[in-house]
Image (cartoon, rainbow over all chains, first blue to last red; front, side, top):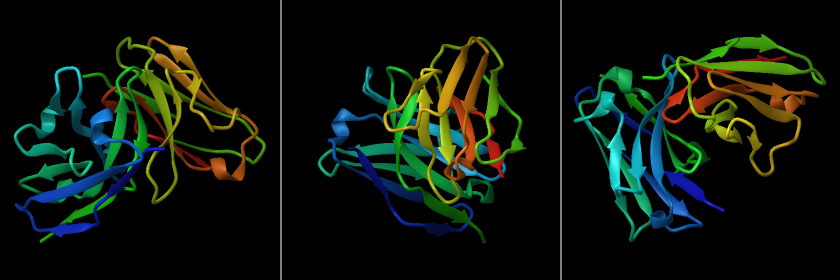
Length: 119
Length: 102
C-alpha cells in the first residue's frame, strides 16, 4: 500500500520560492513515478510535471518551464517540488501523486499542501 | 493542447437515484480516460481508469464508458457518501469538475 505524506502548509510573499516535499512509504521511490498537481478555485486541477521513467528524466508543464524544479532523494524516498517567482495566482493546494504510465492515471495521492502567496 | 469539458458543472440528485456525467475531449483521444472523486478538504481519489475499469475497492455502482471524444461516468443507487465533485482526466488534462449535490 503506497502512502504519500506531504510537508506542511506554507505562506510566502510574492517573488519568493517554495519547496513542497512528498515522502513515500510502502514502496521505494525508485519503483514509482511521482508527479505534482495543483488545485486552485479558479483553474481546478492542473498538472505541473513529474518523472518519466523511460528516459529517466523529469517533464514539466510548458506553463511552468523555467520556474519549477522537481527532484527526488531516493535515499529518503522523498520527492520535492520547488516553485520560484511566486505570485498570488500560485496560491493553491499542491498534491503529489503516483502516475501509472501504462494507462495514464494518477493512482495514489498525498494529502495536499496549501501554499498561500500574499503580501 | 487537448481540452476536457465536463457537463454538467453541477447537478442535484437524491439518495437511491442515478446520475450521468459527461466528459468530452476537444480531439479524439486514447481510451486512457480516468475519473476521480473528491470530497471537500481531501485529495482526489481514483475511481475508474481506462475509461471503464473500476479501481479495486470502488463500489460497483460506479461505472464508466465511452471512447474517442465522448466519455461518461454513471453512478446508480446514489449513496450519501457519493455526494462529491467528480473529475475526468486524460493524461495531463483534467475536466473542470462536476459537483453532485443533494
